[in-house]
Length: 271
Image 1 (spheres, one colour):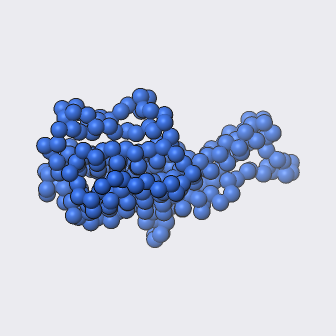
Image 2 (image 1 turned 90 degrees about the vertical axis):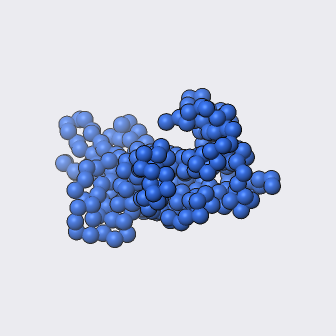
Image 3 (image 1 turned 30 degrees about the vertical axis):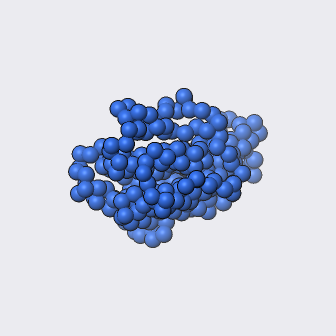
């Protein structure tokens, strides 16, 4: 059954998110005997994921652009002095709302990732990747490479993302119970202006850059979805004569920078 791709966005396949959720997914599935329903469900999940990630990228780019604009302004013009010892510190307008929108989109993107388990394993886990890990440990064993990859994703960034989103939805007076979002802060020391970019942290944790964290989260969620599909196809169809191999980022085609391509079985999945 031919794959239909409808143009609903102003982004092309030169955008890595678009390439890796459309062209790449169709190519990867082409060699495996999935049913039509399974194939369409997987395409639908990646289509939804693509829209979430593009929205997240849009929010992140907006914050980054506004921050760079303010940095340039402060560097070239300095701060507006309001009095003998008072300065106006420029701020990113709507920072809290944009950060909250990003976290909401990220949680929905995790749900899209979790939805891949339904067509691939007839299992439903929503955004609870921890539950998918527990199930896969029973099915494949705790030392299976796929299980270890998922556990690493969960421990390194998924748990923190869920904690932040939960703290936003249900703030509590305890460690990690509230999400704190800090706008631009500038210390005036003589003629030298020292600035910090917008940051966030959970109660009791150290602050980290919103702009850098959002960039990393977009890539991490995309990698998670790809690895769920690639590893699951290998688990379900171990006798297929081809397998997915990762292309190093610097070698990817700029016209369609996919991460995985099919190669004869025997090549090793890139880390």
